[in-house]
Image 1 (tube, rainbow, N blue to C red):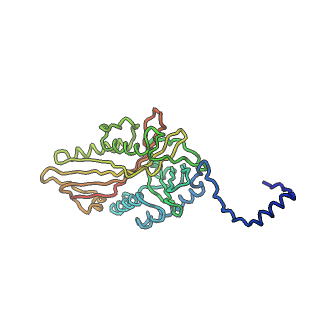
Image 2: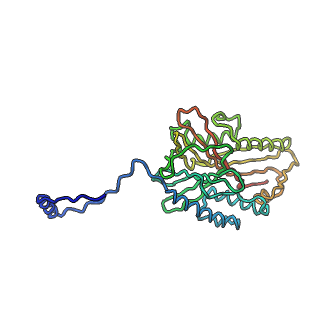
Image 3: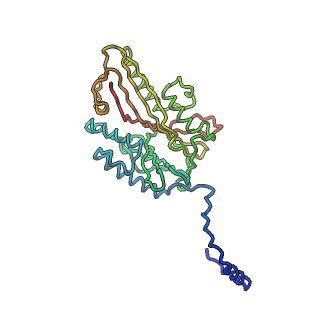
Length: 332
């Protein structure tokens, strides 16, 4: 905008000279006031560059199955998840390759914040093998850090992502203890962990819509219980790891909540002389054994993405995406 010339009157000149003679201290510049609404944490262009760099790093590390090469763009828990997949690929001579992680975005959900850490979600294009699209969770720990892959999750069948703000605007960050939803983001993660652990016996069973990942978990649990019946017991537990990594508001007043669970699946032998043969080469590589005489424990790192409706809604919570990667195994 062009500035209009300002005429200086004689009296104005005199005032300026008098003030100058008093030699006041130079005023300290005041910082610009914070905007009423925080800006989007990064632009679409910046997000594209992050994904491009991530794709380059993943390609190099996947080719050599070398976890150390992931460090520039991958952090925990994704680092342990990918590292375990490299062990699996190596143990099976490439028959069980690492999970395909496309780095081309079909949709991007950017936080609207001025604080760190900052976490954005990327819904990828469908992989070439026609598996489900992934949700990549990308996190920047502080202003000088690179955005890194914190985790990924697999979009469940027939899932429609809730509407969110355009990346240029950004989505509001919802606090873990927010009371603006049907339950707080932290309670949502805790309750789903309880549902996965206890099944229909959980007091939160009716709070969630049915979903394919839970059906698979319960079917596998049933098979494992039957396999060990008469010679031992089989138990599963799911534990949340800290606060949700991020909760981002949706257009309808709800939130997308992302959390990490640690799952333990334990077979305990009670019959004298009973053993658990460990025929899976991946489990052999992780545990260092081919037979368990007392117990066999598998540890999985799970990434869950939930939708939690706004407070006052009659909707149930739903699972948008779920991924489980076995990261440890112990035989005794």
